[in-house]
Image (cartoon, rainbow, N blue to C red):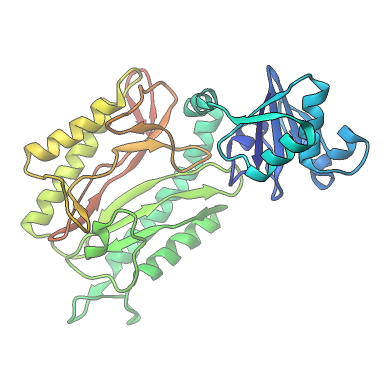
Length: 358
């Protein structure tokens, strides 16, 4: 028997296997072809109505009295003659102790490749849910771009809105959040990084935005309705790029387009990633690793998106083989102190014939 424990944030596979979410922790037991969802009494009725393809239980229904979820897991093991419990990597260590000491069970972390594999290949329903979120992501990105375009630089090069307000990363992120909330999504850790801040790919960004500098915007909202994520990055500038900045942007755009063109079922993801690296180097855009930071292209070309913002497959030097209905990002980027950061990211569905951009 294999056990998951937690909620949709700590263990998204619970929602994947049962279709149920709750603020409190729940347990899921996968035993052959049978899946059992164990919730507390407060969630019992709702879980029976909203869960899918599983047997729903609570401590009272399993034990005949109030109790803990750990007691239910132990009781299930005893009733079904299991003395070994396989658990996910996220399984709480305290719960391991309870099951071993109170029920004499042998608990160990299992290889969950089978579950990761199932989640990599999306159903048509999952793709539709991701597409809905990506439409919201697109609306939020458009709003951010329009806000940046509406500003004019002052004497110091800071971008200023029509009412005299200095345009900051925080104001752009607020605009993005409002669009997401209006469409029942929530953005988390949105990136609006201008100038030198954009050289660090995961720098959230802060303070005034300036003319003639790249502004990297990475939006990855989660649907409050279905739990799936979207993901998109664009790089903006209010002003005129230097020759070096323009070359940087153009080669990232080319890498992005060529990488998408290589996507199809059966392709080795590392071939896509290595192709991006080769294109950059052949055009003089090298990657270096210094004592305090790296420059160039030093992250993967993409990753899977679903109930987690980063999940399999990886499009990297050790990438997986892509299959139809996988949903992945393509997001090459170049980051140099002298010119700033540029990243362009789209979310795509892998098909037998190529890539479908969401």
